Image 1 (spheres, rainbow, N blue to C red):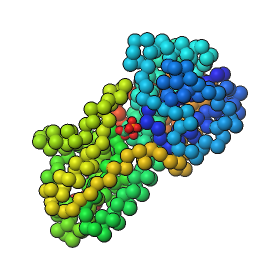
Image 2: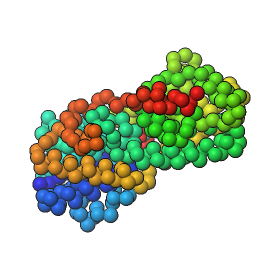
Image 3: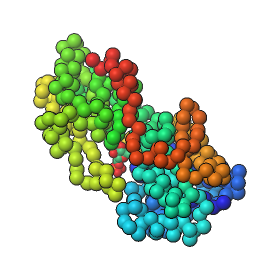
Length: 349
Ligand code: F6P
């Protein structure tokens, strides 16, 4: 068979490991040919691809990013876009397309199915916000990176008796904040799912400092915001850049800086902020993500040869399964709030 593969949306560690797995499993088990589309759906729209042979991908397991490149291009942004995409795949003789991406990329894959494209999705995102799978690859690596940063922030915060606010990624969900916050012993964890009260955060910090803990680390997701009121208006003004991508997502960033200023102003404790940003997306995948990415890639090839299209490979109860794409896209997988209410709660008061 002739398999197309692409990587779309924000990159993450493990994308290359999936590409490697698709190419090598396809070649070894079925003598497939694999074609890589460059820069996500943009490469399909512009008819740009490269042949992917085992020799070319065999060393990719440990490399971060994606050798195919990525973009946030949406073929459905224009009326003629979907037909252009279908025409490219037909012209290239693609029997099946493995789309590696998050909600947006897989949403496009889902919509191309009824237009005659045989798609199999592979879930990626550091945010871990894709429904239908317990885990996306890239998340584990991002949490390790964020946790190491928080460990470092803890020691400098202690030395200078400061409050440090660490902003992590997570547009709609707080998985990275919750995991890295718990792992790094954060004193407050603020997530998009639960609007926060700045006064309450300040009270908590003040109480800690009065008990003799003269430093605090607050972990905040980039998408977290205060509850409705004047603080919300002020925070929104500081964090919404006005830049929106082809899927309608606003570019975020700045809540950590805003919050650090508010904490210092209201508590009198010297405060700083650190935004981890794209450091969380770069670099080599952890062993866990290498294995998960490889499992997903091998299963995607199996799904192609079973003719199981319109599905996404997924992790459920430790096993790699196939779920309908429609179950995966359209609604983010919110944080399991028990992580905050039960697990983190004793340590953040
Ligand atoms: O991939 C998801 C994500 O990491 C979000 O958490 C973040 O808001 C976004 O990507 C940033 O994307 P960009 O690379 O376009 O700045």
